[in-house]
Length: 182
Image (cartoon, rainbow, N blue to C red; front, side, top):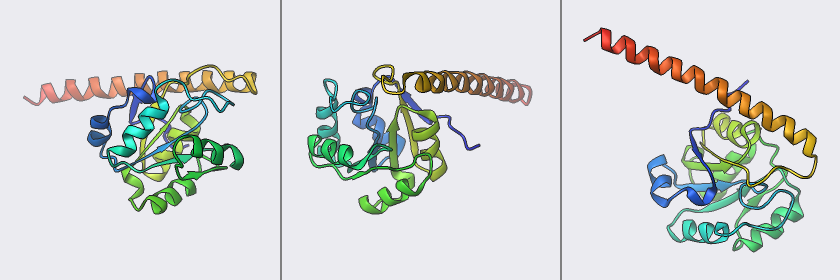
């Protein structure tokens, strides 16, 4: 299984600053839809999201939607967000949509910051493709297929907890070994 550990984590997409994107090495931004830019299974973007997308584009970052949602919904939301390019039915975590987005935006896939709320689709797909993985917390619990997503969110929390413990142990071991070499 490929790594689903995000390179960066934020509470909301609107918490990511232009400076953050530059420091990540991003030259382009890919966004998920459900629970990242719009409320789950809706066409409603919470306050600040539309403005954030506008500001990111105005700063020179091309933005694309990469979503597993169906085509008509991605098309409609792309119009709502200022005629963003989009890739629907992306089949994340498979990587083909990431490489297609890189080609569409004329950047290397490693220069795309993929922002999404799900570890095993958005983050894992970005990591597999070599993009910059950025996880945000979901806006709300999923309403459609609620039980399925409740179980998936539980798996995500357990995965993150386990990986954080592993990384803390690795960092502690490194610090301990480095201090012995002095």
